[in-house]
Image 1 (cartoon, one colour):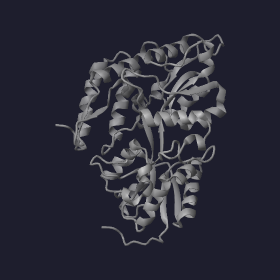
Image 2 (tube, one colour):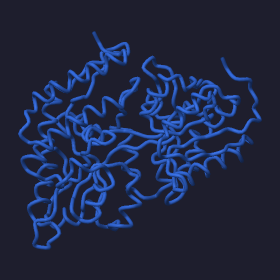
Image 3 (cartoon, helix red, strand yellow):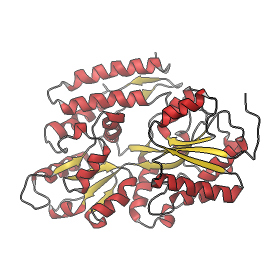
Image 4 (cartoon, helix red, strand yellow):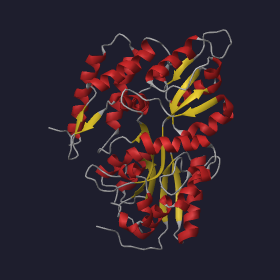
Length: 415
């Protein structure tokens, strides 16, 4: 039952970002531009800690915010709790300009639109250019090149200090928030492997024991266990300490999204590293695509305002507003096909990221709840790198059993 409508009611917008930080500044800037363009009023609230819990409390009071800006992977969980209303794309004139895989990322298992992307990102490979040139290496084009470069960065003293204190690859492989799985997906998919595979009609089956998945796990595991080219302590690290290894000159390669460019330019220097597409794996160069989505929450008394905000955020004007500034931008890569990133950000590295997103970026599937899949797979990847004596095949068989249970629990297991 829809609430009584009042198109003058101010819209309450929640964004999952640090209060007082650049993310909140960006959201305020977007809200101001939207107000100026449409006349609708918006109140922005930034929440980072316990975002989901606070949303639950509001749901219990039947007083949800009107709009939520949050990770694309939150769609399944919020939709299955009945917190979202379906988005009518016919009411959003700019929806036809959204990049295909971006629009698909907002669909639930039943194919209905419950989220709308406003920002995207994908993984590229950051390389210490000065190290690469000192050791006379080419940019890696294959996994063999990648492994060889990681080995050279670990064994050939690329920083020239005469000590054995550098490593080839920076990798956040902690189980916290599923980091190990999040990072590893860039390698798994490029090998043609998968965590779970669609079996048609919104059903899935576990697929960590396929030949391709096993090969990817074994290859990645060898980087840590055999050639020892991953930074020490990786299995307990999430992104902040991993970022530090790269900027402190302890690691030479890092697979990551574009959001770290401003930081590394400042701490490391723009001339010291380069941004290149990931080398081709056994299958292709597929990398993880992610981003932020706009969710229109159920029970709003201003649905016209909700639609107007969603339409503005994905419009060329909204996207450019979201991209403005050196920091405090809400849009990493534009999702609107008419926006040329080079016009807003002349730095060619951003174009590299935009091209990767559109050509090889892949989102995690929109299942009712992606979190347990990511968490369970992270625990296995982490265990295999933390204990090099474990048997890969046995661990992956156990993982597939766990994944089968998760799919069953969510009602999407292929029989």
